[in-house]
Amino acid sequence: MFAGSGRPSKEQVKQYDNLAISEIKKGASVAAILALTPFVISFVKNLRA
Image (cartoon, rainbow, N blue to C red; front, side):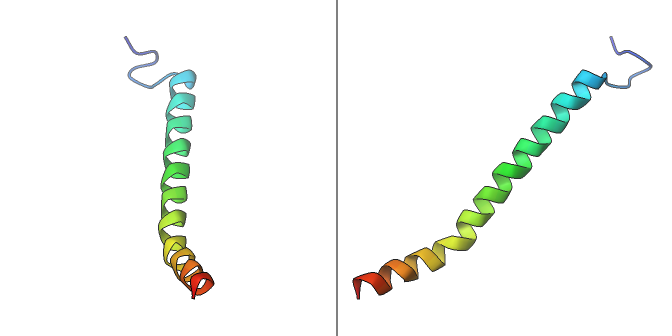
């Protein structure tokens, strides 16, 4: 089933890397949005005031 005694193939490693990178990017963008939300809310409140 596995090539080379249980080690994943290069293509599998690439797939896992791409998955990890996309998850990290998703997490980073979500964290950035959450971090910026209070600033955006206060900015909008200042514009309306």
